[in-house]
Structure formats: C-alpha cells, structure tokens
Image 1: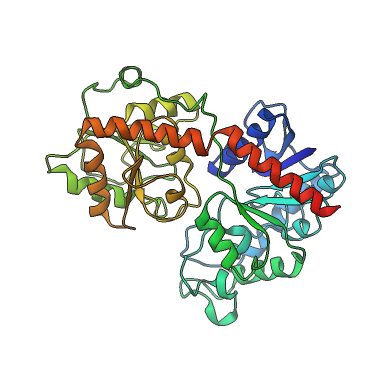
Image 2: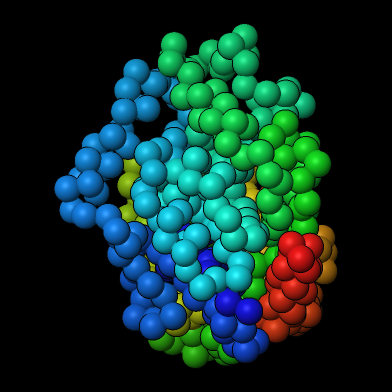
Length: 418
C-alpha cells in the first residue's frame, strides 16, 4: 500500500510539520509512505518537491500571475490567510497517474492543487485538515458561531460588514460545492475541528474521523532542567514561563495580548514568575513594556533548541483564541512541561484540567493567570504535572499509536472502493 501525502511544504509552518510527522510515523510503521510538496526544506529522500510533471516554466509563470486575479477588488479586515486555490497547478494529473493507492491531502494553499483538481482526483482520497479552509470559503479560519457562513452557506445577504463588495469567500465556496460532488474521507486532529466540519454546509454527511497528530517521543523528550537552563544561560532557581509567538505577540488569533495581560496581573503578586521566555520572536516588537523580565529566544528552527526551551520552562502558556490542534502544546507536554491554555479548539484534546495543565475560561486573562499561579505555587504539584504531561504524550500521541489509526483508515478506504 503506497500513500502519497500532499502538502504545500514539508517542515515550514505548523501544518507542514504536522503533515511531515504523520508521514514519518507511517514510514516508521513500515508503510510505503511518501510526501509530495511544492517547496522542500528537509533533506528527506522520501519527500519529493518541484513543479508538477509536464508543466513548463512559461506555464508556471503564467499560473503564478493568474493566481492573483481572484483577489483583485477583494477587501477584508480578517487578517487570516486566504487561499483561492486557482488555477490548476498540474499536480492533479501527476497524482492520478502515480502509483499511489491513497492520496492523503493536507494543507494545500495557493499553487498546490486547485479546487477543481481536488474534485478530479481519481485515487482514493483521505484529507487531513489542519485548519478550516476545506469547508470554508477562501479563509483558513472563520468565527465559530451558530450563524457562521461555513454552517449556513455563503450567500449574498450574509457578507461580513468588514469585507468589500467582491465576495471572494462566496465564490471560492461555490466552486468547492460545484466540483466536490463525491464525499472524501476527512480526518480532523481534534474533536472541535471535527464538529465544525460535520456542521458545515459543505461537509454534511461526509465521513469524518478524529486522529490526532503524532510526535516523535525520542526527539521530543524532557531534558533535565539544570542542563537545559545551563545551555540557554538561564537562572537555575528561577520560576520561568514560556510563551510561543511564531506569528509574533501581536498575532490576534494566537492571543499574545491575553497572555501579557494575564502576566501583568501576576507581576505584583506573590505567585509572580521570575521571568518570561519567548520563542518565535527576537525583540519586543511594539511591546514597549513587558510585565516580567523577558528573554527573547528568537525563531528556533531546529527541534533540539525547542526541546531545550520547553525543558527549561516550568510552565508553557498557549493563549490562542482559535487553534485547530496546538502543536506547540503537544511538544511541551512531550518535554514534560505542563500547559496552561484556554479551553478552546483542539487544546482540550491534549490538556486535561488540573492533571497535566490548566484549561482557563475562554478568553479570561484572570483565569489564565490563576492557572499559571496554580502551576508555579507548588513545586511538588509541578513535578506531578510534569510526569502526567509526558505520560499523556506517550499514551495518546506516540507515532506508533497514530500510525496504527491511519493504517486502519487507509485499509477501510481501500476496501470501500472494491
């Protein structure tokens, strides 16, 4: 059984890293798994990159220019990335003539596969979602409210007031509805994303299964705290909080402002942390005053540096307003560092309240601060939380555990086609 995973890139970005981890977990389980990307950053021989077969340089330049046409006249205050997935890239023809038994789609983005090409795939398709784009319009995330357009449909009379006259989202959604006539097997990494997909106007009645993202527990494992702090030059006795800011502290969806507000509430209390570590950003960048002494670790591109950062911290804060899964939370748990997060999205699939972390009331900085203080205030509790964090990663997210679920799903999809 040969599986081809299709993603825009292999290890650049959260979705790419998740797709690559799924691919590698299957390789480790003995499956003939390969990955097809537009841009490769790894040196993995099982990952193939480059333009689709049969496409010349002139055609590729023309497609790149055409890709911008749907966005002309489109205006929105929604800062989330939008993908029109047009025109055809040519990759669909390549996949249809490949030796793959199953095509596993991931994050496509612009220039990987068009909406129309997805509808013309002749191989059995499994689509692992990493955000909401597949059942939305062009936006990759939408508000999770009862009258969201992805639930009720994209109509002329429900255009958000912050969007211009051109309704790119409605046009993209209509193309999906027109060309995706045959239901595809959908995989969601969290129960929240699965619920949104099931309730969407586009995916109602489609087969949807929850399978979490895996993590390599041989790489992502606790480093003794004195060692990690020694390497990073940190105070061995300090109580340190870690915050990831891959999109910067000003990324609204990632909730950096809520984390800083929670830490400001703690700063004057007896439970105040001694310091804040931030990865994904190299300087304050617009945040003139920070509530705690802060060390910016910058963009950490290698796994070892991230492992050291997680292991050096006493608690990891994940204050996202919206999160389909939460890869950094899983990485933290695997490194034995408890997680404090809001009770939203995919976080409850990983964080069990008061067992391996704290789930705060959505978007209440005071309750987020309460969770941070609860972790830091008792060293014995913190040690128990650390053990529970690692144990939860081992039992639910180990590569072998996730690979077995994907193998069973592929076998079912193939048997259904006989």
